[in-house]
Length: 64
Image (cartoon, rainbow, N blue to C red; front, side, top):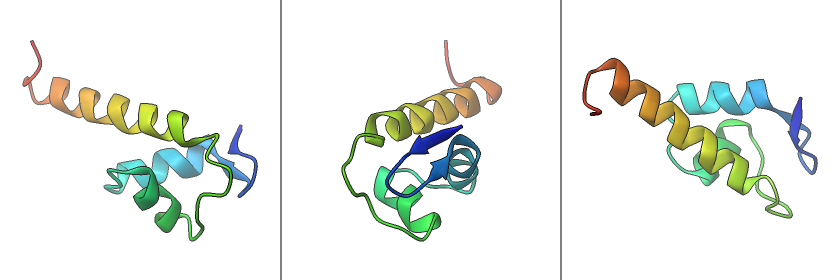
């Protein structure tokens, strides 16, 4: 599914960038070799980063 219309980035591309260590939206854009345009997708990217971090912490047993 396309999440970023301006750069035609899919959820899989964004998830891949986050899995490779992107910790901020600008890191995700850089990993996808583009820059933010309108910024509408930024909230979704932040949510993906938070969800990935939470899952990693839970896997490590660091979440209550």
